[in-house]
Figure 1 (tube, rainbow, N blue to C red):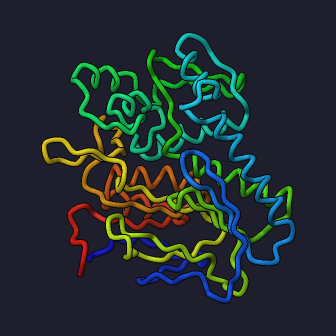
Figure 2 (figure 1 turned 90 degrees about the horizontal axis):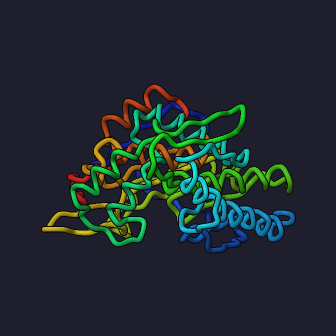
Length: 326
């Protein structure tokens, strides 16, 4: 199998061809809880002071963020924003506004390959209900017309948000887990004084704090092959970095013999094609999540060029048409 790995020279990251497990000499404490429709887990080296209460505090914060960011909860701040921002300017919480600002920047920097304001398209393709379908042409055209962060107005002075298009819906599915991990890691650092831990949400969103004992390379994270459970594409060593992986391995539907994955291309309004898996390492888990989505949408060549101009990024991209075995 031919692997695509775009690596930047950095003393903080090493890449190897074959997966290396966490050293057997490292005994860990693992605390997990379900949130955002997946399992969030925090891993500490054995002997970490206050590991259990610190983890519970961090997981409580993730629960609070789900209450704020989930479009599946009518009372959430994002649901209220989606319901009202087309008719009035809506004041939002400070952290929430900063997340929206970051989404706007990432949309510009990726030329729209990552765009959180495509909830209407996600809905019309049925992926918000995990009931994928081919939308009717008129429904699809209307959803595309009211999608895109270009229709979102952010006023930093008043901390308000306004939508230019009725029907526009923001959905943080491509960045929410990473953002929650970043916030949880910051809490562990600032409130509990913890410097070494590994946090993940479902395995596809990861943030590594510091490094495990006796391993200056960082926390080893194996990137799984999207279709072959026993195989890995690479192992990356992370230290104060986030990792995001995007693939349509489980969420897809088939129509007339063609597979349609849940990751949409905001530029075409249709499911992205041509990429089997895209992983990105960045300084934060939120950025890594968003950029792995953009790389999945744009593919290998774009990902390589994007990383070459940004020394803090690393990506591993597997094309859809590459053979699955040597």
